[in-house]
Length: 225
Image (cartoon, rainbow, N blue to C red):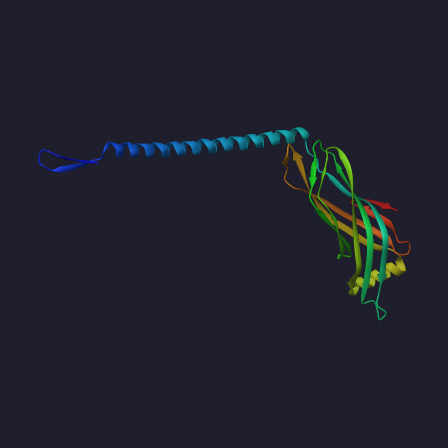
């Protein structure tokens, strides 16, 4: 900064050449930084739109289909129903069964299944839960997954207890439901699609006397064993 006297003897202050160039350099750097950020933003936006367009084109080409996940077989190790001697106001059910599910992937790409749980219930009362771990299924393939439910003396109370004792001792048929959902995601070039829910809703009938499965129904088709 320099000070000079004018013709009247008054002193005026003028910014030095260094300060002027400093202000100009700062303004230029700020404009350059803003321009760089704008270019990066536009580049990332373009790449994101390009990726979305590629995925959409691939989806239109392969036409993904919903996978199938069904209860194929049920093996009965044992089923035991006991009631207190003072009257069936409650009943206890012990159960050990194995279940084999069949996963069908009709797509041209692989599917990633998340860990899932299936509930075994009697008249809406949960008895136990079977867990299927997560797994990957290749394209156009069929895979079997086995799981097991084992419960010990589950207390079924009140009206359901009366029905359970009657079903086990008189009718020799205990009807159970197996329900749950499987989360599946289609994988395309290391990119996973949004989660798709595959529901499982089956009815199985077990004979306590024979200790075996006598009926299985999933969806609309029933199979007698």
